[in-house]
Image (tube, rainbow over all chains, first blue to last red; front, side, top):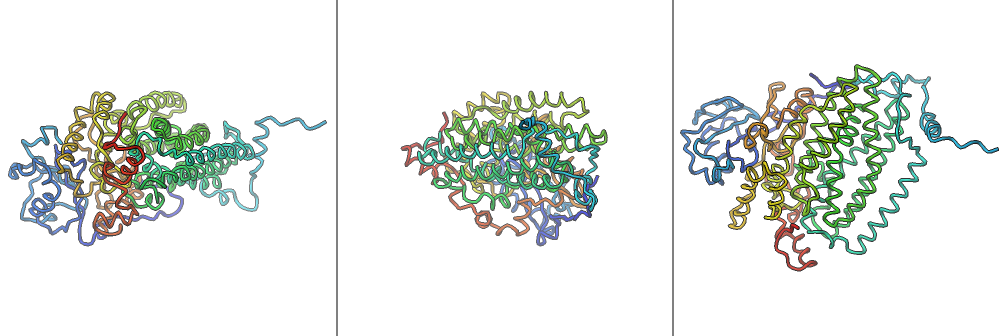
Length: 119
Length: 505
């Protein structure tokens, strides 16, 4: 459907990737760890290796959680934009198919948050 | 013999309908260019029935009387240091959210109704909108005057209109009212007068005003009373416009139904902020969000739509979800405010033991199971000095602009609810089916959304660090953070003697 307007409608895309100074927006959510309340948003270069997303970007926020150091990264289940996927750690976000405003979810089997509360 | 006095109806007709005429030098469509493009068909504007039949001269008289009373009370409140009779200074967080989030909404409504007061073809409808435009302006002014008293004593009340255009959580009310203002006049009035004022306004005003009374805030109670008779007139206007559109032409029904669905959901998402205010920010809560929802929406709203079903209008889409969310909403919203309390213009505080017991009682199915653990965890962290605010910024919903904190309450209340749409090759994230439907219907409108988190990352919000962004918001360092240990708290202690915690009666 389309907007019903009186005259020609000015069509601006406010969050074009070009507006982010070489970055793209990436959302990351840790399943069963709702202590963070929502997925977190990061402006990241598309060339960033997936490994850097994990060990630098994600660690900067999620390492605050007591479960973080217990994560067995080999066992982590990943989802990208609603589909299961296996990231290639040495490849870039772009080459892993992560695009502007993508959502990455990760599940850490065996870790169910503080005292098993999924927080 | 003197002329017989006119009856009210006749007098109303002369003083309203007599003001309009069929233009001959100019085409009526050129004089009223905005009231047909939305597709609403009006065959006879004279069928418009204003149930209040208020004329301008009577209107001025009533309003002047109310103003006189209101300002007398405000003066005496100031002279008697009414602020010292509050239940607790932490209560003022609710007032800070109100003056920054709701008062500018009133002003937005004023602008919208002023536009309608010029552009509806029917003179009866124009007059009703002109009065409401003046009401809304008056509400904004009286709220500013009332709350300015608190500004002399407490932080965070100094620049609501500047903040309304910039602050991350205030983009929620701003985008709501601007969504309506940028639509055509019939959609605007369906949004503000019907979906918000008729169906949901009680969710804002009744709990808020009784909340003020419960917490010794007589200043707020007074402007609430002063606005109340206007509100009932506004509600009647909301009902009248819906009936009028539906009676005028059968083709109007699907359009009105879609607007109803959309603006119910928009207004309901906006009220998520009120749910947190009601359950957590008020020191003493007269009733819980869930109780208010059950009375004002499920019961009263249900009866209303029952009545409207003779026109073919159905309950708004996703109302069942809103009812299911009633047991979760306030807890989820207050959680994220506590996590981002270093970036709010009001103080945050964890619920006390007494408050948590109250919440357990009011939310027997959800509070202990899903929400108590996080507040207890944070309380323990605060005690140990290990609590940290969120180190990143949350994902925002493209439509309601609230951080995407809502969960799949009907299937798994601990699983975040994610929806996504594609438009012109880009992804657009939404928090719910309600917001996704709104996006999908008019993607070119919501692709323009000014999302605060995205604006910060684009470099349009004062800088890349939290202090720079807060300065750009005109938040002073003392405005946010924990209530305990704040300047507001210290001032309260000076007046009331030592109290080292948030109060809960």
